[in-house]
Image (tube, rainbow, N blue to C red; front, side, top):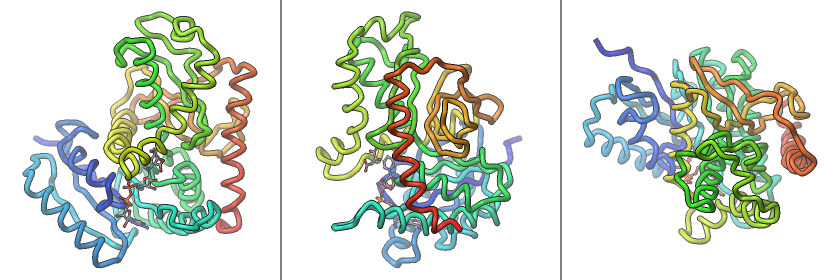
Length: 329
Ligand SMILES: NC(=O)C1=CN([C@@H]2O[C@H](COP(=O)(O)OP(=O)(O)OC[C@H]3O[C@@H](n4cnc5c(N)ncnc54)[C@H](O)[C@@H]3O)[C@@H](O)[C@H]2O)C=CC1
Ligand SMILES: O=C([O-])CC(=O)C(=O)O
């Protein structure tokens, strides 16, 4: 007998990332090849967006995915989040011409306050929330703060794209398979200030730091390349990363739900106060996952260079948090 279906909400479902994401969820790549799903798709109450969403749903129909039990389109977040166990918050307002960062934060704060409240009201109490829409960490923080009846640990921000980008850059540098790299960490904000840290990483059991042995490459090439990769994709494609972002979202939820078998991955999670990061800050950290829970990798040494980088990305997150604090009262 097949398992009961899991309800999965996706916001911004008619957008670029949505188009790269929904088909993979429906084919079982996120929750497992034996796990039926029900998709509850949210778009803005705008005729064009809702029509585009209907088109995506027609294509999903046309795939005849055996695991896709049903799907619904919504413009009201409370309806979209009814009984969901997984919520992928992808839709957000992009920066428009002449828009300051503070304006962007304020517009998105309104969206994620409303969606946090809707999750609080309608979602299953064990809902796993992943915020993809930028600024992802602060949006996740806002949603978490707006959902006081749900456990804070249920809210996460996507740092997995940074993690995957860093893995790929390291594998290329060493001329070795990406799959052989273990114990990479990415700290902080999903922004150019993130700190991808390969001090603990191994490849085929050997230390990546020792193999590379080039602090200048780390500081001047690796970190800027990973940090500015989003901008480089926009420059090359004329559009921001979508398939790689959707892939990272699939990786994040799959690992959270199905486990990592001891492997380290990066998730943006509310800090428990460790590593000098104030409690509650939505901050990227290395984790392992087991039994549907994530566990921080604990007690890693923090050297002077790492402290500086971890504090720099923290400072940006605190500034973002302070910029929206008045909207959270
Ligand atoms: N965390 C990460 O690693 C990454 C995050 N992103 C971010 O993901 C977000 C989505 O990117 P794309 O799909 O390329 O954008 P897009 O503009 O193609 O699609 C976004 C969709 O969200 C919808 N939307 C806007 N506000 C909404 C709301 N309140 N409720 C429901 N739907 C809403 C829009 O109508 C649009 O269809 C952006 O904020 C982007 O910056 C992109 C790449 C990586
Ligand atoms: O940079 C952007 O606007 C999109 C994004 O978050 C990324 O690709 O990392």
